[in-house]
Length: 108
Image (tube, rainbow, N blue to C red; front, side, top):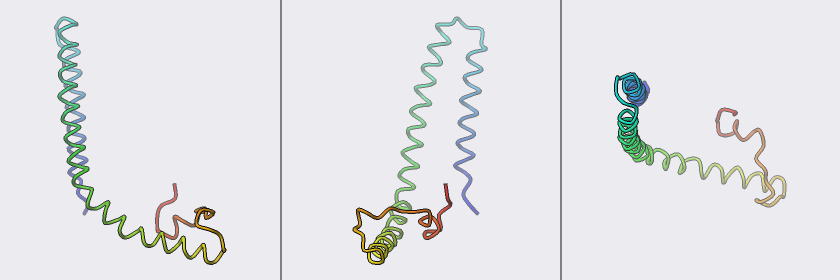
């Protein structure tokens, strides 16, 4: 089963952010004080989101590299086969609608 912990954490953080913003906006404080608190909270949230993005990038990098290693030779093979069968240069080859089917990718 797929790991859905990342989706839960993202939803939890987003809910916390929205709740904190509404709480600050509805609190009986002067406008300047509320704006300062929102600014401080946004800085904290931005920092946390950058940390989450960095952690996700570090966690996904090996998988992305593995996919590149698996797909790269297949792409080269397809291009080579098309060049040989059509007599066109590699620069002249345009990927057509069959590209997605050849690699089992969903069509956009």
